[in-house]
Amino acid sequence: MATYRGIIFIKGTIGGINFYDRLGKPTLREGGGGFTREAIKNSPRMVRVRENNDEFSEASRTNKYFKRSIRPFTIGYKDGTLHSRLMQLFTRIKDADLVSKRGERQVSLGMATDTGKHLLQHFVFTPKRPNLFPCNYEFDWNSLTLHVTGFQAAHAGFPKEASYMEVLLGLIRFDFETKSYTQVIEAPLILERDYMGDAFSIPVSALPSGTGTVFAIARVAFYQMVNGEGYMLSGGHAFGVQVVGI
Image (cartoon, rainbow, N blue to C red):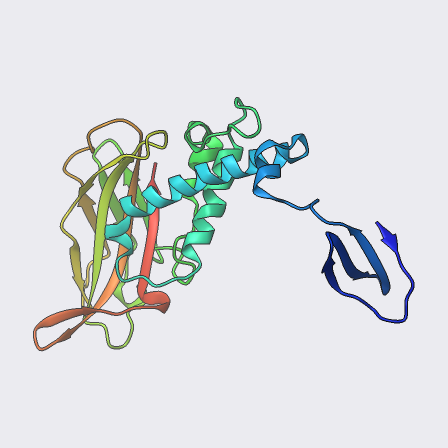
């Protein structure tokens, strides 16, 4: 890198020399020292870049297939930040892999740790409705049942135009190594606006087949009846998704 003096300030590249302004001083340097594809692939100085790229690709593949696995629970939900927030989640889970060297850390090995499971179970899918209900709810793995207690329809967040609330529950077995998945999803439970009960339960008929991590996931959505048809209300507090057990 060098500075130069002259009447005319040049900015750009001439004859392989880059002319640019640095801290108010005309500066020049020889070109070709940037992040070229060949340099990233082979240069010893780019080892960290290659490691980051490999691990980013691992998190990206996980994100792609994970979103497919939970698609029945996110249909109708519009949030441009979900993809990037899930990327951050899987990057953090990958970082929980403490047995692999940098550049080879895997989401699957991160998910095998308590930290990885904690991160997935506490991920907020729907920030405007982070909790499904304003009461107690818990998934019982012995009976494969979601139990909700202390429920009051008046406090459930019904939009004024909503006719009923739908609760969808399922189990997903996701293999974080192969990115394959199986699902068992039950018929949704419908709670009318005038529901007077203070508790309800939703069972899942069986565990999904295959190998991998099993988690319980639930969705709350509100619908408006128009000419005998139910139409999902989108946005705001009218939609919630949450991992309720893992």
